[in-house]
Every structure is written in structure tokens, then in C-alpha cells.
Amino acid sequence: MEIERIKLLVKPGASRNSYDGIYNGRIKIRIKSIPEGGKANKELIRFISKKLGIPKSSITIVSGENSNLKEVAVKKPGHENITSILLND
Image (tube, helix red, strand yellow):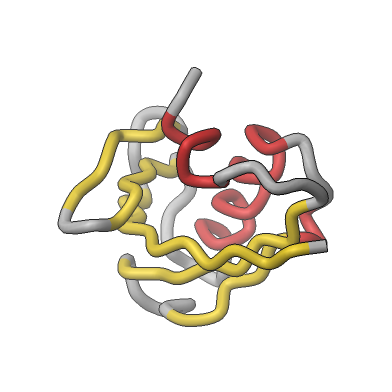
């Protein structure tokens, strides 16, 4: 199993969860939850895991837990490029 690190720009408090392209080399993700008590981080992990079809336990926030600039580590079963999967519908 490979691990891929992904840099994110997360915007909590959005009207809906969505991927919003690339901004300054980071994948921009809008999350409905507010950044209170870790709610936005939990929803972020749930949102990414659903898109990738992997368990939530395969995704870890490695930096930026209290920031909108985050880096996540994704344990991926194959050789797919996670960034490409997240940005394509």
C-alpha cells in the first residue's frame, strides 16, 4: 500500500461540499461544516474518503489541523494519482 501526501486549501462554512480546482498548488475544497471542535476536519476526511472509495481510516491530517492550509496522507491501494481522482468527476 502506497501513501500519497496531498496539500489542500480548505474553506469551511460553505453552502455545500465541493472540489474547487487548484489554488497556489493546493487542491481547494469547500466544506459545509464550521471549523469548531474538529467538525470541519471530520467532514473533510469523510468527503475525501467517499470520493476515493476508501475507508476514512486511510486518510490522516498530517499538518494544518487548526488551519485552512492542510496536508493529508492517503493510504492508497493502487498506483492511482489521488490528485487526478479528486479533481475529476
